[in-house]
Image (tube, rainbow, N blue to C red; front, side, top):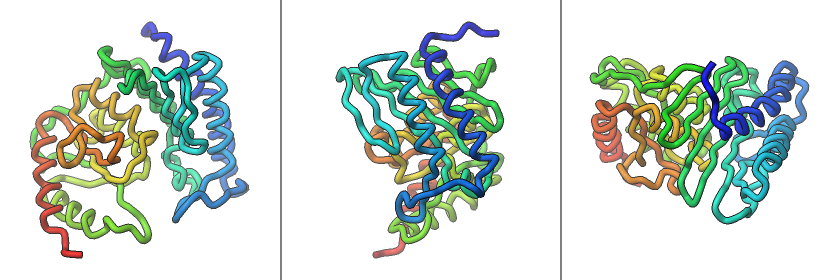
Length: 269
């Protein structure tokens, strides 16, 4: 078995403890008490419980680090280090009994993501990267796919739901991409979309309107697996804008061109 870094041990240990409760509650999903989280979105008691466990374990291992968490928001720390955590990415999947959700943990140091972990408790797959050290899934080294042709590629995305102002743009982008690729997938868990891209299961991914906790870990994992990650328009501010385009080095530019063409066809407001 590979020798694990101290950061991996801290992050994986916390994720494992939180995952036990998620898996238990997922088995009884019909009995979960849920409360309104926002437009067209619900959060279960399991979500909050997992966040409490993650915060407790991470704070115990690294006292003084700050937090940015989906449910409880931001907590200032030493000013240099911050955990960015999504305790349950794929909440709607979870509540509908769809076994596709994850725990996402990233460590930010002085504004840079230096470690990221995405844990899939159903498949027992843990994707991890540390800056400059490459990316792994369990004990396997990760590498993005080598596909060079859009016509042979599978691309993942996220689509806004209910009343969302970006629907026309997404539809035009989808139209442009679907005309050129082998398939488009939408599974509703951005952290796993990025992790699967790093593993070569997908060849590209794009989405808008994401939050930092959705993507912080996944961005680093993709980059350490040899992939390219930018905003859809090409900029570097994914964490601020929530706009993400990720792919291997051969497909990133062609996908960006397709998405740009789709945006250009957006109907006038």
